[in-house]
Image 1 (tube, one colour):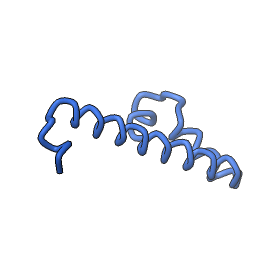
Image 2 (cartoon, helix red, strand yellow):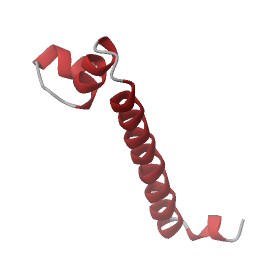
Image 3 (cartoon, helix red, strand yellow):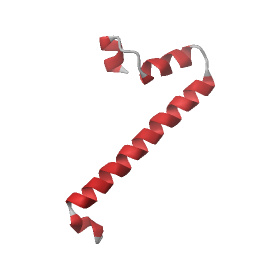
Length: 60
């Protein structure tokens, strides 16, 4: 959100702030859900890549 405000980009953070001010709770819930899915997906991918790079953790 800081980068979007600093460079005037219209993105997910800007959409979230506008939805909060407009009291569009369905859009707020959907945005939080999508961001949470992205965080979980990126975390899963990084763990999978780390397991490939360092096979010692596969035994643990």
